[in-house]
Amino acid sequence: MDPAVLRVIFGHRIEKLTLLSGIPDTIEELNFAIKHQLNITCVFSLQYLDPDFDDFFSLHSTTQIKHKATVKVVTTEPVVLNLHPLSHNESYDGSVTSEQSFSPPSTSSMAQDSLDSSDSSSTIILSPNRNSQRKPWPMEFILPEFSVETEIILDRANEVYKKDGTLLRIPNIRSDILDKLAQTIYTYTAYPSSLQVLSVAEALIKTHPCLKDPGSSSGLSAWQTSIKYKMSNYRTKLRGFGIPDVTCNALKHKCPDDRKSAKNVKKARRAEVNYLPPYPAGEDEHSLEKTREELVSELKKKNNQKIVNDKMSKTFALRRHEVINQCPSVRAMKDRWPALFDCSQISAEFQRITTVPLEPRFMSSLDLHTPKLLKLFHAKGGALGQRLKNIMEPLEVSMCSSVERTREVVLRCLVEYLGEHGDDLIKEFNGTEDSEELEQLVVAITVTTKAEHSPSDNSKEVGVVIEGMEVVTGLGDIARACCLLLGLTYALNLDYPRQLKNTFEVFQKLFMELDASKLSKKVQSFKSKLLA
Picture 1 (tube, one colour):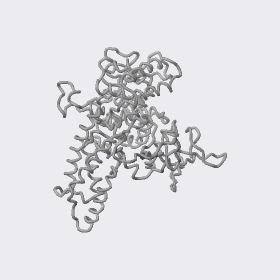
Picture 2: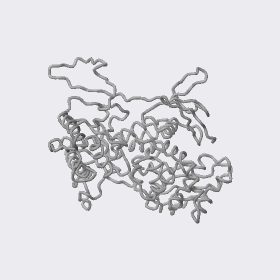
Picture 3: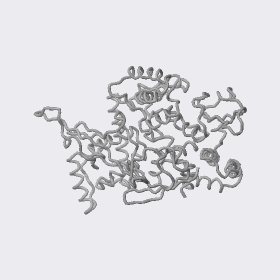
Picture 4: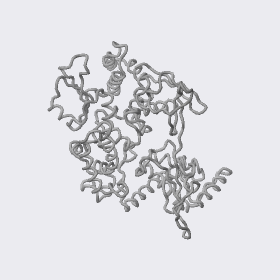
């Protein structure tokens, strides 16, 4: 596919967007390319310049634009609903004016991530999934609003600090600060990492320098320790309310061999946003189990994708409880949740867990880095360089390789470049698959060449094998198989294969940009070369 160029209008900016793989097939892929290359962080939609009317219209499909077309980025704001309780002398009459119901989003309302029961009003940001309260960890942590008294004390203390460097010595407000920080942190994760705790402490001291710790050069150490222990106490408090993502780690819910507070802690480790969500309002295990049985029946019907999608979304919490708490085998999961192993549902499940679209981001990132990756592979010498040259030979022979073929070559080279073996990821079979060898595979992508096909046909069948069982077939190309295999590791809560840990780390942290701030030495070195 030939490269394409688009003229992109974003506010006062007019940029040229180069798409090496041509116009994407979906709006999601185009949105990701524009967001990534133009560094746009807000939510937006796209419009295209119609040549017949010489005006902009909403873009509903990428078939509406061609090479050198003009598109406009239109930012959209979330709808914010402010709810105020009625006073004792007021009665509800069923009518609410628009001035009472809606107000534009403000910085303070967006920063207030948790709902404090002592507040007189609560702010709710409407979203498609009302049951999910988790959000991805922000690039920069935004402090919540503290109580009125605390804010006044901090404002005055900051003024004094600017004048003569005097630090605040009022311990009473420390409890209020830690309470609000714990509530806000919990909207992102119940188990913040050391780096995340550090980012909270940095945001606090940056905003309120009067709170610096005099016992450390950075002024952060005491606050890091306090936030860590406050989150531990906050989790203990939440266990009393039966919150699932902390209750699962209570000692009485662990098996006898794991009954130690720091052993086998079940928590998000790969930037999962909805790791162990609660059941939807008004639902319990029995009602969701009934929905699951209905889902299995609906799956047998034709043209029933919408109902299947709705029931898969509704039973998400039940599925996560089984995966996290019961750790079933892949075979058991496929028997109970056959819809989960459909390609579209793998992508949907990944997005439910991480809030990130799977295939659009994976493919767009792979295509974006392909030119630089090929340069790195060509520049490598020695025995590894010769192996990479042999893998890239099909691209050298054919001047018009397909996008799928190019992606496959790049991924095969990537595994070798990271010091791992391609045979550990991709297993080749000729004619028929060896069932005995298949049963020995833990995690792999299978490529079976059918002998009866003619050379002109697409004679290769690509599938995914987990725990000796072929869980997905008919994928068509290696790149999509790698993408869906990554999605399955999240959907089934599987560990990455030890012999392919660098490859999957690149998939997750560089391609999907999940937990990208914490890299191993090998991947950090690779990233430096890739972005040089």
